Image (cartoon, rainbow, N blue to C red; front, side, top):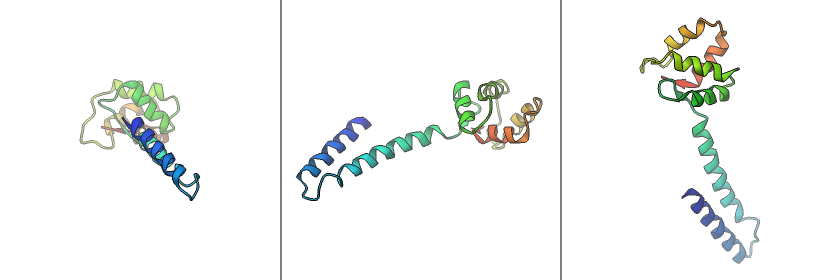
Length: 118
């Protein structure tokens, strides 16, 4: 549906530009901006935090990778292993305690937790 709307906007923009005396360079830009905006919104949604309780291992690994965590697949496996997490624990204290067993370093733990919600 979005593709049809973007295509229709692009066609309308090109038709308007063809009829305009101002030139063609000014009209296609808004259609391109609208398309880019939709892409940015989609990217922003996927780059957000994921639930440590409900996301699958690959979703968690992707979020950890985006957060700059080294070896995100391994850490995603650990996140899944220690489920469930208390919904009211935004700092994921129990996850932090379980990850500490592996001595990952405070920076790594902070990156992992920054990519997750309970």
